[in-house]
Amino acid sequence: MSMKNRLSNETKHYDAIVVGAGFAGLYMLHRLREAGLSVLVYEAAKGVGGVWHWNTYPGARCDTDSIYYNYTFSEELYQEWTWSERYASQPEILRYLNYVADKFELREDIQFETRVSAAHFEDSTNQWDIYLADGTNVTSKYFITGVGVLSTLNIPDFKGKDSFKGQAFHTADWPEDLDLKGKKVGVIGTGSSGVQSIPEIAKEAGHLTIFQRSGQYTAPANNYSYDEEDVKEIKANFKAMRAKMHSTYDGIPIDRPDRSVLDHTPEQQNQVFKEAWNKGGVPYLLATYSDLKTNKESNEAMADFVRNKIYGLVEDQELAEKLQPLDYFGTKRPISHIGFYDALERDNVTFLNMSEAHIEEITPNGVKTPEAEYDLDIIIYATGFDAITGSLFKIDLRGKDGISLKEKWDNGKKTKTNLGLSTAGFPNLFIITGPESPSVTTNMPMAIEQHVNWITDCINYLEENNIEAIEATTEAEDAWSKSVSDVANKTLFVKTKSWYTGGNIDGESLRFPIYLGGMPKYGKIIDDVAKNGYEGFHLTHEKNL
Image 1 (cartoon, rainbow, N blue to C red):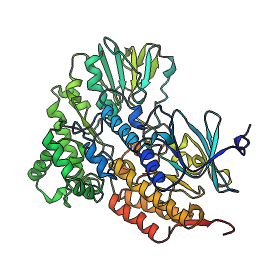
Image 2 (image 1 turned 135 degrees about the vertical axis):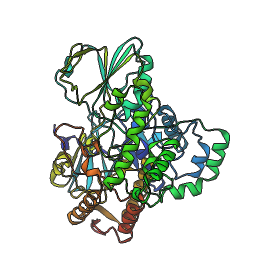
Image 3 (image 1 turned 90 degrees about the horizontal axis):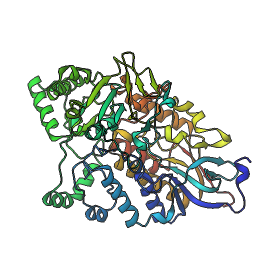
Image 4 (image 1 turned 60 degrees about the vertical axis):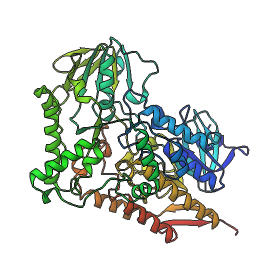
């Protein structure tokens, strides 16, 4: 039976369907219900949380101060919730999102354990036909994706991958009640999930073998528990903090002097870098100078500082050499760590740099490199995600005339949007923190609030003015995509192979798909579009008015 034939007169209709019940989906649901719309959220997991539901690997935590990594739309919510530590762990973030769902009674409009397999725009009715994996379907006027940019797992297609006789899984698919004690464990990858999980795995495993794909810029988190005075001060300053969060480049309210590294002597540079390093966490390093991501010489000064720190932290200098990152600092997502370097020097840890000893194949008994075969009981893939577009492409999204989003965007190679919120040919589709928006280069809850507020205001405008459909124009889309590239091409991001551009996915090589102009500038752009009657969008008014 074709998907269209699955529809019937009994098919339930909603004003809006939202996919995903993480930070984005929960707030979108809250805002649309406030607006009086009928809305349903579909979530594949058993509960709320999005990426924080799935990423249960040991050591998982946010790399933004927890007091900033939360919603700011409700001061009451902010005053009620108290974070226990500076960088919140996955269980605590998940508790927070469950608290939000309960406080605002959101669960009644979320259907869990439900996957959206397809969403097709029907030209004749200007509505979305949505097909679920269980064979049922609904229709809606608006289709809104809150699927996240780091949700679709990436496991490289190593030769012999399926032949392994032991247990193998991705960090974002961590088994419940996994027992690592006495086991020979291999971890492939030292990105964020690898760096966070390795110290915890090393404590439990009989032996841990690490296969590093490339060196990373990592900084100590300097995590600590909040005391009562910390909490009082934080909550007393909510309004000022919120204002600063929404007015800073990446939604993290820390000072960012407008100065070049080259304005300072090497001694002065080192002092600035050292002070930021001692604060703990990557955001403070990134905020030291304004030209770190645009000036090669300035970037190299910071890169050398971090590289020298690695040599100082790792006693085994041969190991320290293998750990050296070679890319520009900050053009891959930098990583905060807790005990990573100490873990590498444990007696039960073997560290391999895959640039020297690449993985030839996965065998029934473990991992084979040109030099040796490593017997393993468990293989853990800390290999990241098919980022930015991967989760959108998991849904068979089809717009006008049946064109698929994956086809239009050429599997991510030709991604084009208007404002990172919509794309031509797909009326009434809204993408929260989608490609060509500030997205993952910012504090994500802030980027989500910015997008959800704009989408809600847009939908309110459409409903109040009897507008049946809104669609990005190709001219506006071309102009926006060009401006995104123009901004990116002035930076060092485009000179680095990273997951931002699909560099971790075999066969993918994309242009830089994120707007780097900062949240305040981006916010003014999208607000001006709204003030000008949604300039750059074609509005279709309801018939027979």
